[in-house]
Image (spheres, rainbow, N blue to C red):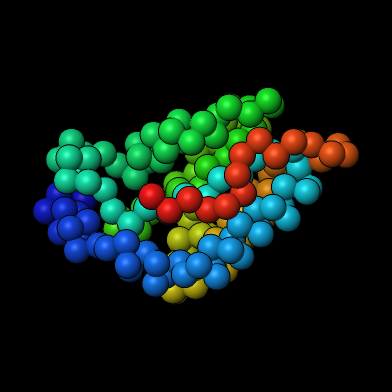
Length: 166
C-alpha cells in the first residue's frame, strides 16, 4: 500500500465520519447483538471501532492487524476463563476489519475462518451497510463459539458487550 495515500486517508479521517457511519442507535443494536449472541455460547465478543491511527503509529508502519492485536491486549480480551475471547476491530481509515481470537477458540476455528468472516463484514461495509455487516459478523463469530463452547446454563459475562469507539 502506498504510504502517502494511507497517511492522507488517516489525516482526513475524522471521528465525526465514524460517528456518521456508526451512530449511537447502530452502536446500541451492535451491543444488543453481542449480548444476545452470548446466550448461545460461553465465549466473549468485543466490538471495537477506530477512525484513524495517530501520526506516530503511521510513521512506524502499524498495520490494522497490529493495532487490533494491541487493542486485544489493551482491553484484556485474552483474559477469559476458557481463553475464548474474540475481538472484532474496524480501522475505518484503512477500511479494514480484523478479528483477533484467543487461543482457546482460535485453535478450533483458525485463521481462514476468521478471514472469511472479515471479508463478509467488509463486503457489507463497502455497500455502506454498516449495521448488517456488524451484526452478521457477530452472528458468524457466535456460531463458531457456540459450536466449540456451547452455553451451559448461567455463565459470567467476563467482558462488556457494549461496542468501544477509540
